[in-house]
Structures are given as C-alpha cells and as structure tokens.
Length: 173
Image (cartoon, rainbow, N blue to C red; front, side, top):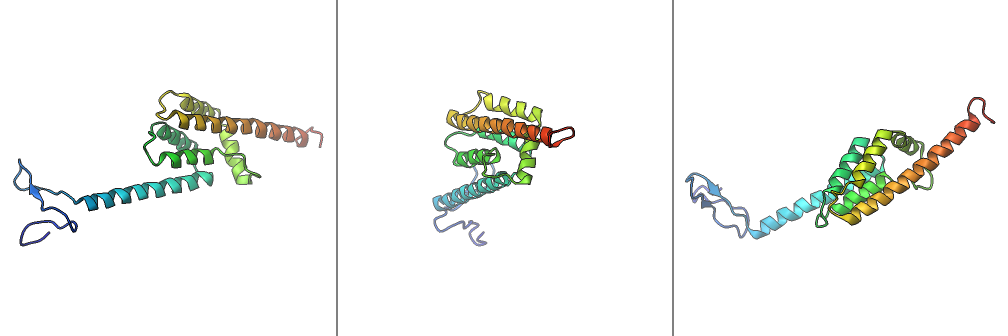
C-alpha cells in the first residue's frame, strides 16, 4: 500500500482501488487481467500436480477402500470441461489394475484384501452403476476396468483356492 495516495499496487497495470458504495472505509480491489491470468494458471498447475500425486499414490497401491470409493464419487460428479478428469480416471484405472506381468507380494495382499471384502465390492458396484455420472464415457471406462478387476479377482481367488487345496492339510502335495 502506498502511504501517500492510499492506493494498492498489485501489478504493472493494476487499477487504483475504488471505494465501495455502501461502506466508505472498505476498498474494492480490482486486479489486472495479467495478475488474474497468472493466478488462474498457478491454480490449474497446482491441481494438475495434485492429480499426478494422486495417480502415483494409487499406482503404489496406497489408497484405502474408503479412498477408492470417494474417488469414484468425485469422478462421477466431474464434468468433461474439468482438466482433472483425465487424472482422476487414470488414478482409478491404476488403482484397479491387476493385469501386471507379475504381482509383488504387497500388491497381491492389497488386491486380496479388496477381493475378500464383499461390502466393498458391492458398494463399488452400486456406485459405478448409478445414473448420476456426468460423463457417460468416463463411466463406461470405469465400468470396464471394474469388470477386469472382478475377473482378476475370480481368477486369482480360484487359483489361490486350488493352491491351498493342493498344498494344505490333507491335500495332494
């Protein structure tokens, strides 16, 4: 604030603050277009970086069941104009991607915990099937990934069950 004129200086082409009509002691500050543009760009950049971090968290298999469910809720409410919709969709795809060449023990434990949690499976299926999705194409991709996830669950749980039968007590090992 400039002490001699009482004007704020927020940029090279900032306008002088104007007094509010109703209250004489308040200032209405109008930022220059350049400053507003820079603020918007910074905001979008931060949102993209957060989306990338969320993807890495999902890919690392660190999202809890509750996080996955709330992410699907948020994804369902996103419109096609939101630049983060791609990041959130990719995050969901990464979190549900079981089709790795070889699962580590930690990944297998992560997925097994999800596969064996029937309430989670039911809730996720219900949320993916709701009609409140703003972008149908995103819903379709999410449903396809969910079907692949469930198919892998059937495959891995069946293989695990057979291995337990063969190697367990009274088995044919």
